[in-house]
Length: 290
Length: 266
Figure 1 (spheres, rainbow over the protein chains, first blue to last red):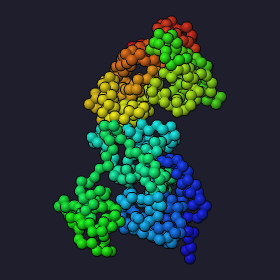
Figure 2 (cartoon, rainbow over the protein chains, first blue to last red):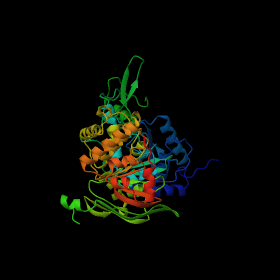
Figure 3 (cartoon, chains in turn blue, green):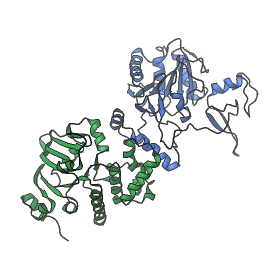
Figure 4 (cartoon, each protein chain N blue to C red):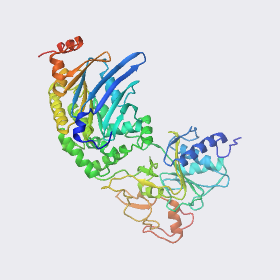
């Protein structure tokens, strides 16, 4: 018989992760080492996020899992099933109903509240890694606030492309102290990190690091005075719900250059269509159709 | 000592005063009881054979090694400090601002993965520059000063020849206007014509910016051209000091005599 402890991990492991989480919340943006466990899924599939979620879950929680904004992609579906099976918690696809949202690569469009926790899956937690391969050195740089190197990366972008070409995992400065990798969310979502009402937790399973942005914390995207941070946009509206202020996915529709843009946040798009918003290519809204 | 010293006062006291510096590797001696003074605008050469402790001495001063004994009194913009007793953050800040270290192998001193312009700009960004246009302009003008075509500033150092890499490393170090530059065999590994050009360049830069420099080398021709004064080291100890011409033309210690007579003549 398969009898799991609540949320898969044993209580001592969850306690260890919670201690790391408390420390992370106390020092916003600081990467806290933790002894990451083997999870029944491969590295890169959200082992860090799953462990953080497991440590935060209560039986009365309502869980939502998204992957690239969508509730119905493989990663999201399998993690949601995992917690349905091992914790028996209620799940949802509606952002507003969820108390814990585990995410890969997106922040939901709907504003988050004080009652919610957003858990990010992080592949590489160290923002300085690609320029400085030595962990001893990057730790020292964080300790001494030596962040000139982060701007070297942005400088390279501009010298090569004429503008800051980093579009995801765009480095941020948290509470005027630690430079942090916000995980591979699009830079479009960066402004949502700052002064967010929800608690934001980041888990990197393979790299064994946890970090956090507590509610209402200042998060500033790094830039140059003469090349300020830009949020960027697809320059189109959602073809299904007509939204002009959401992050859009480009969908190739044929082999002659046809394409459409649709909201990456499926819950947001569905809610708008339910409320009667119609985009250029949308069929009439039908509950359960997509 | 007050921060606001007049230029005249500055001339009368050494910029850096090292006393009794000792670094041991276990029971072995790296360098022992080394004392010297470096004056503003002066180039001090440290010569000796391999294993004589000259690189150990340089690395102790540059903060890469911690000596067991000794003091290094530096009279910088913040007044008088014993550099060897500084906490690490202050030490690293000093190495980014008022001091600079040119490595023998440019690959140790450069970031090979980013462009030449970013290599020069890194020190500026590290001291808080946040204006791309100004960083680029300053980097370009420094590349020009070290005779690297500014048109190549977006190329990576891997595309540069050895001599160009070394000149790039010098530009990267001088861009923040340091007062003391440490050089470890700056011409090592370069062929003679490139060496001559580099020496000429370093001499020009040192003179025109009033830099003080400590040059470690085994090559007596390098110090003959660059250094005002010499420190001869043997087995970790200083065996002879004096003006460069005096030491090279009239060596007193028998090891110095051996060193001078060992130079091959063409």
